[in-house]
Length: 505
Ligand SMILES: [Zn+2]
Image (cartoon, rainbow, N blue to C red; front, side, top):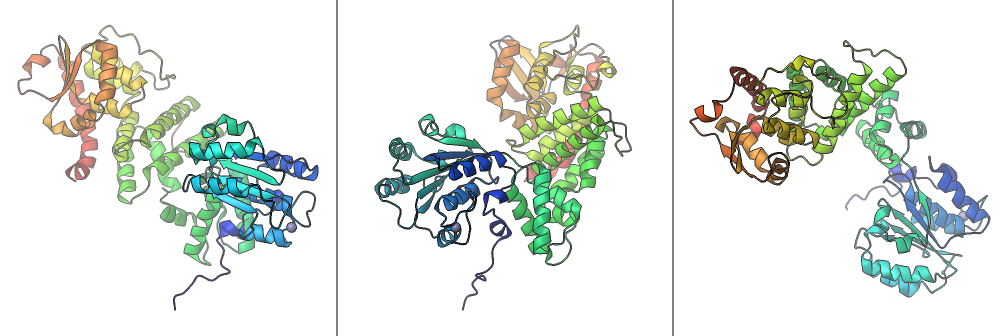
């Protein structure tokens, strides 16, 4: 006989799902308004609950369904003991119908809804239709829904939930009373996790709960699920911070701090070796960037409060703000990057090698000596025009445009190319040993053509291998340019050493 799961087993998340308005965490405005409507018997026909995932939309919808149908309501709250309440909690009530807009986009269910809606509820006062992810419904389903919303029967209440209210047609929204649910601050999540741990006899360190609370990014559901995973992994043993890193793919706090320090102290090798280590251990690099951002933010807050950071380095506020800005930029880029590790490595090199990317770009292509050391690391706005340099040629401007567009991957690939300008053509040449950069750049030709046009006017762009005879194009360069270029090659070689494995594969 197959082992069925114990029927009494309930996931922590289900078990701790709020069953009364008073148990809903952090959505006080919504909850109070709904409760008042129930008490004063001034219910709307349709409610729209908009908000991020995991903050309590469906829970509130179910509590509302219970409160309006409860045989023994208490101050606008359901009793959770009568037949109606219990059936709704179990999901077996005939008159509370849940439709998932995402699953089959609702066509059949909305059709059935239209047929059934005229009938009075079988067991209770109100028929409550809860439509989750309502923005996913097809136009056909929306139209059907709209007809019922125009003349809703007295015994029907709709509760729509959505994570993307801007995708819900205005014709629907205008017929609803809308609420915007909020993300939970980490302190509220942490407090809730503590309550759960106490009641469930889960042994977890305070640091673990705090990390989970921050990691959940405002979604109590995610936090509860994380806690449950850890608890079932550890059994009755105490959950330590290390377990979090093992199971959740997080980098340790020390690693996060070490990496930020490496960036601030401009230690490329240390930064790259941390990345290599994380990648080898299969850590999620996007999560790692989230953690870096969190930590940098904590450092900034400490500084703002006039506190001292217990770091072996001096990091003043402008430097930390600049670093945060770069990390946020990186976060935007990495979510759509095809090679996350490379992007992180390129960024780490940029941050550790140069004051700002533009300083390096200028040094590479200018024929005049550049006072690089004068480029201030704390110079702020990214969109600020580059410093006035007499030999500000087009290639430099191109690199700066790319930088300004925040395309740091393209920027890094371009740094390895050599521009050759002809009458109606810009040729970007690569040494065969930089095939990685050439192939990388080729993936961005559309953007490249657009940005080249901005600087060079209407010219064709060609990404090509360098011709053997390089005397032609190098003739105009000063020795300084070569040495700068050689220096940059050295730096980029660092990345390549780390990449070799991946390129072969
Ligand atoms: Zn009840």
